[in-house]
Image (tube, rainbow, N blue to C red; front, side):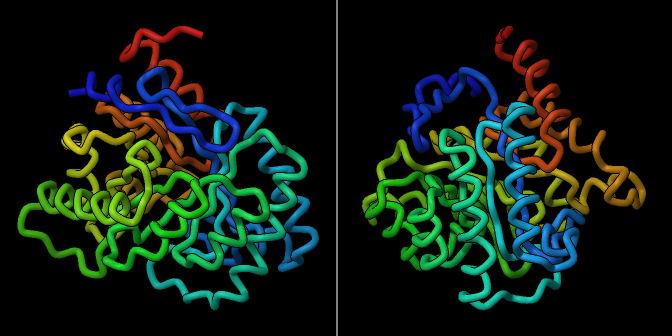
Length: 291
C-alpha cells in the first residue's frame, strides 16, 4: 500500500514543492498560547508579554528550521481537552503578528496556520502563511475549504469528533475523511492541495488513538498525503503508565518511526532535531533514502 504515495501529485506549499514519497517531511509546532497541553505555549513561557513572545516565536522557528523543519505550524488556540475557546479577535492578535514576524525573518520557510476560524486563516495568509491546518476539517461547513480554494493554498483536513463513539473506528475515520475531501474538492480545492490527518488525540480514546496508528496504512486508500501528529500527546503517557510531558520524547520518536513505516508523509512535532533524526533513519530503512 505504501507504493500509492509515489502516484500522488506533488504539492506546492509556498515556494517549495513537496514530492510525496521522496522522504518524510517535518512540521515544527509554534504555539502562541498561554495554555498549550504540551507546556510550550509562548504566552505562558514569556510571562504573557506579546512582544517578548514574538521574539521567542521567531527564535523558535529559526531554530526549528536550522534543525531540519520543512514547515512551521503557528497556532493561537489550544486544542487540549477542556481548553477555553478563544474569541476571534484574540486569536487574530496572537497569531497574525507571529506569522508576520516569522515570515519576515524566514521568508523561504513555509508557514502553516493552525486554526478553525476562516477569518484567522485569511489574515494569516495575508501575513505570510501558505498552508491551512484545520483540526475540524471533517465538519460539514465548507467555509475553510472555500477560502483555501480562493486563496489557492493547500489545506490539511484533520479527523475529529465531539464524542469518541464509534462502531468501526477505522472505517468511520476513512468515511469522514473521504466526505471531507469530497466537500473540499466541490468547493474548488484541487486534489493535489489536500492533505489528510487521522486526528491522533482528537475525538478518540487512548485505545482508539493506538488503533489509528496501528492501522495508519489504511488511509492510503484515500490517495492523499498523510500528516501524523502524535508529539507529546496524552495517549503516549497513558501507554507508558502515566508518563508526564517531559518523559514522552522517546515515545514520540517511536510513533514517528512507526508512522513512517505505515506511510506518514509529514510528522508534526515539538522536538524537531530528534524527530528529524528519527525520520531520516526511518526513511533510510523504509524508503532507501540516504542523504
